[in-house]
Picture 1 (tube, rainbow, N blue to C red):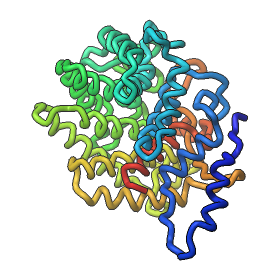
Picture 2: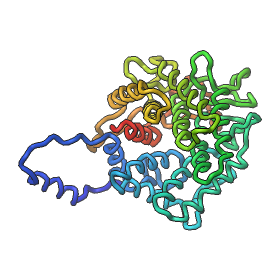
Picture 3: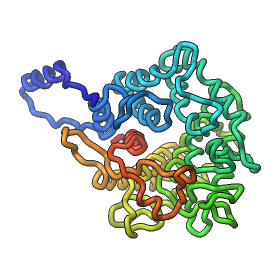
Picture 4: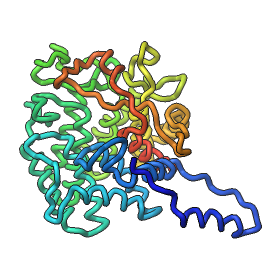
Length: 393
């Protein structure tokens, strides 16, 4: 374990504070965003060793957690330093990134590159700017389906997963804005709307986890190419991608209204399958309360984030903000515990779900409800912090 010893200075301040004033005043409760970020940082000196990892890696999930913590940097520079320390383990002075392999055409590897914009802006260091173009190069040659959607990975030919929308498109949208390359905005909006069309279930408004253009995969519907189930986190990735892309998409872009409409329709469909008992969302979204299905933390946090941010930015009305606040309370009750070390932990997070591969993942109901459940998984804790920041909680 890479645990930190308590700071003597912190203890000294606590000790002295007892003598600092004679009047009694009510202290403002510490925000959940701070409490969860502090728990991560006190348990692990660096994200490289988070939750059993043995080295730093160019991975979407750890960088997501680091980026979420970095957003607290305005309250204390230690939060931004935590992300920088991790990314600096991987990016050298020439912008070369250790363990990034472009020729794998893995769209997951684009996601961590969003941190390069942040670090370049905050530090002015050239190495982060030098690292950015290689990811644009990947996306220029990344394989696509005939309707123009990025394959999830080279080893998953003709497959489009909802996950990939978040992994690739916010990076491209930010690049388009920062480097004045507006052609990428069209790529981004086309992908979001096309993925919606090919994964949509018209009856429920929910989106299936993936679509196989070739219809060759065992998991794909032979008529539609869609996978069989609605996975909590997959839809979370999708709605988070939309609200993040809208940060950069110009107001006058012709597809902006369509993206906002898709966001609203998708959130409305998700609200319909929110569990009325717990107030959160289940691993298999439309099978609430069924055998072995369970309340799932990462998807819940992602929906709260998307609703809160969408309402605050004016894309959707304030009723979604009210719902997000209520769901945040329910998330605390369902997923947040005080752990043995006295700090908060997040439970009931699906560790990972995919399709195909070896051993083969068939996308069945049994598959989704039997994958490993992980405490404090990055893909839950990161969105939790993001949601808490949006709600000022």
